[in-house]
Length: 123
Image 1 (tube, rainbow, N blue to C red):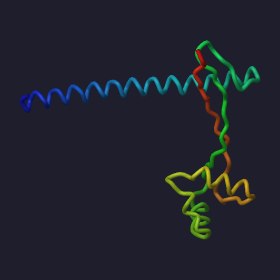
Image 2: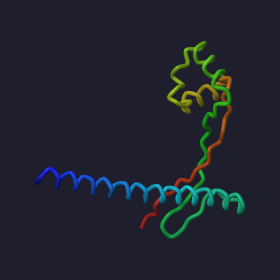
Image 3: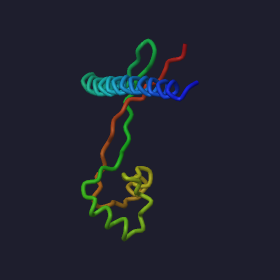
């Protein structure tokens, strides 16, 4: 194979990949919108789970940290050797352990994140 043929082949593959990535973004957006719709509809009908012919969908809740004041968080981290909490975001596991033990970290408030657990039904 000649260099120019390989370059063109790689270009075409890259363009094909870009198109597929665009499709994936669109599909992810549709899924996210569908999950938001389900969460809203479940609230209206007073349930947390339902099923279709192929899958069941259950609302799951996870308490995650939301930083209100990074200055306070950094001050606490430095004073308490709490660097283990940081990872370009608050590390939910160690933060939750502190919360459960009665310790509060200044600058962080709990936020209950809702999502959908989509499970394939058995045949």
